[in-house]
Length: 416
Image 1 (cartoon, rainbow, N blue to C red):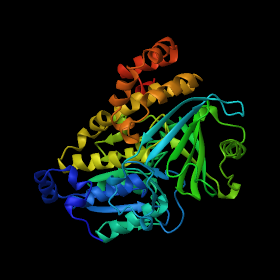
Image 2 (tube, helix red, strand yellow):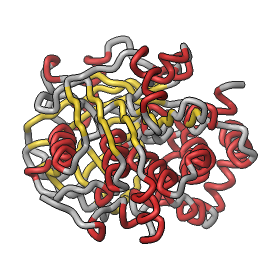
Image 3 (tube, helix red, strand yellow):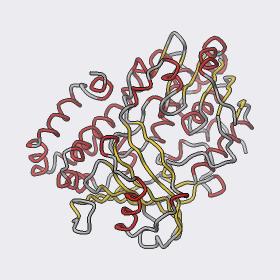
Image 4 (cartoon, rainbow, N blue to C red):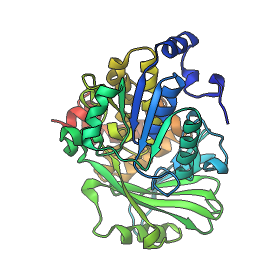
């Protein structure tokens, strides 16, 4: 399989003159970490004719990825969107239900339906395996089943023009620097693939907020197969993860997975977008994806953000502007993070009525646009004066709104 510049989602971002200049200039890069962010970085840099080495500590042929089955902005991934390449199903919409609690007496506080013109529920490990195979065919030196030590990581700065840290969290750069505590805030989640009758939900997918710091989900891959899961913020963890997962499946009518089939993983919550962490100019080390803490603070969604961070890094490398990466990344992501930071306050304050009202108000916006273009969500909110009055009367929400629009939030707040 080959791809021309015209069909390459990264190459399409660059004007021809910039692309030619980047290819003439060339460079060398090592990418440490071969999940979505690392694959995107290797793909983009190779398309600039850089010499790229990609390290992944596990073999791609084995199940190595336990999260991120739903992907938005899937066209940014340079693979055919077929089951052979891991793209199981394209849901026309994501349904988001907000409940007053997680008991039988709960009531529905609000609901949003978010169209998804460019999303897929995937077998993520297959997606990554196929992408790695494509990169190998195109000349990337893919070294799977190969871990990297801290000493080797330090040495990379002397051997390559660019070191891309895509190791997730805690990142390799954090381990080298001895700053792994920066990822203290995170979400712990359980998920599993289950077989059962999902015909009532299929072809849509569903996310449920049940008045705790977290959410549950069901992402059908067909009428009889789905990825189901539940996650909690670090400061709101249950006593027994698995039993809480079982209870969520039972109350929502989903098949209960065996404990042995259940995956446990963490979603980083920050701090992210910190210029001092995303780019080390002296060592030429850039963090992308989870290694940079880039994941939505409200939904936990991070794959499209990871790919975007990697493509942005390569785009700036093409223009010989790598030192601009921290500010550019912050500029691209800050509005998404502002909205997530504000809305998350309704969860932390135990106000399903406010969160439900927000979902009712913003329902109908494309699921990716809610993140990437939050102005659409804000424009919907201003049309609901009663909801705005609730927001203004709630000290937590008001404080978060002030923090978000004075930039006293995210990495600044986390390091205070």
